[in-house]
Length: 172
Image 1 (cartoon, rainbow, N blue to C red):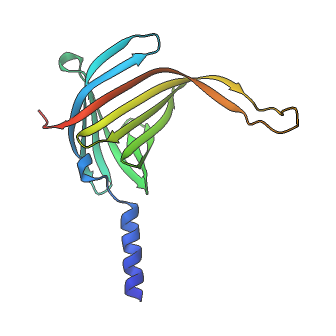
Image 2: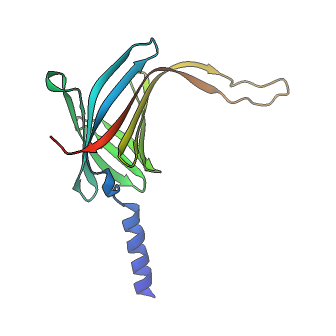
Image 3: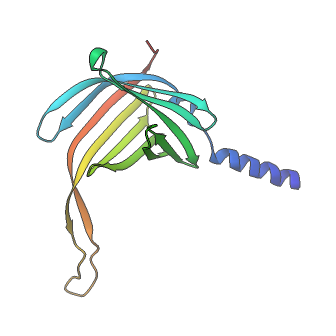
């Protein structure tokens, strides 16, 4: 009985720190489209590299643009617990990320802007989506004519969004 209990807890503990699926590893690239709601659109080359660094850490590198326009950002994706990771920018900034249903999602605020970022695994690579919003107005938070409490709701204006389809390729 002790052996079964021991085996059960070992399997559970290993499951809680399960790694990203192996098909997440590799080099992926495509075109990033950036659109602001004033109607301006820009396209950039985008690359994503994910490689296992240790049992609970991945090298997670994003590259935007090419040649002299290229911007490379090297991060560490660290397993925190069950479906929780942190993206360590290696400069004192760590972003929470959650993994589930074949997607890695992060929501964070920087300089008054809320960013919603998703990496969605597909058969051939990834769909990347980002939207940026700014706080707009608060409504509710009062009582209706019958004295029922109406919850306060904070609304956000979307300022821009980005999207890309990244296909698995061999690194150049």
